[in-house]
Image (cartoon, rainbow, N blue to C red; front, side, top):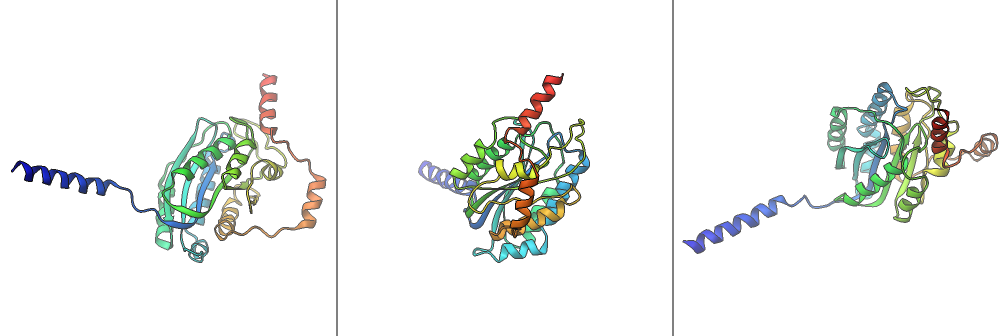
Amino acid sequence: MNWRAAHIAALTLLLSGAAAQPAAAELVDLELVLAVDISGSIDDEEARLQRAGYVQALSDPQVVRVIKAGKLGRIAVTYVEWAGTHYQATIVDWAVIDGPETAAAFAQKLAAAPIHTQVWTSISGSIEYGMAKLKENPNRGRRRVIDVSGDGPNNDGDMMPGWRDRAVAAGIIINGLPIINDRPSPYGLEPMPNLDLYYEDCVIGGVGAFLLVANSFQDFGRAIRRKLILEIAGLQPDPDPAARVVLAAARERPPCDAGENRVRGMRDEL
């Protein structure tokens, strides 16, 4: 009886251990970290507009068609929100999207999550966190992308573009979606001019990296839908070389410590 009891106990332990193992990892076309700015420059309405843009884009029929058109027909996605170095949060953890049902399930989880805003802006911290998320992802993709959206420069934590360079060295692509607007922050700080040029020089990186501009928070939904389609397909926006030459000549390119300089200037005035 003792041998029989021991045998049953061992079998029970083996079965329970097997049940506790995570689901088998899947191969996917893309591992995508959506890293979304909810820093102090963003008010509650703007945070809701961002969230709604992602909810609609992730379940958009054309986005789903592009996913299914991939070599494997599926991608792995996680959605995180970030502010200063003290705050990076996973809102929806890794999930495989391979059709309308899984896309809708991800979008529903995102829509149901509470929305918060925090203080400071650490793009470097968001990239560090995104790299950690990619490392823990159980699924493996042909491409790995961190998609950073935000309305201001780095002003907290490590300087840019140090973490950008670390990510690129690890084979990760960083794409950017700067949100251009002329509205002062809730604290009265004016938006930094030429944020798109800052993102171009200091944030994005890797083979095939690109940025796509949202011309306001109201424009965010359109921009993120287009960006997701390009990102998932492994494409880039059509360039306009003539326009880029004019813009580069006419506008001052912010240095990569522009955000830190602004904070130092504010502190010096106090």
